Length: 103
Image (cartoon, rainbow, N blue to C red; front, top):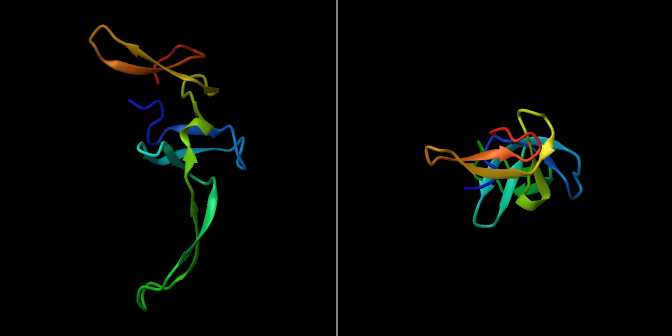
């Protein structure tokens, strides 16, 4: 189970976009990278496929290492570390290390 999931709100703690926040768009668990909305913008040169799809330079989000972001707790609203807790029913849940609430 990953500590950060798709659609979580995260804050970037390292790199050129340090301090920015955004929603997680996609996670690549094999390479430990994720894509955050509106951060780490890169220019991608795209070739023209046909007359209806023109080519050009497209701006899009680039990957960021998972270790360079912190999850923003929906309960306390602060960037916090994530822990795990096993409930009595055997279910494993994520918890905020600052407020000890379930995420």
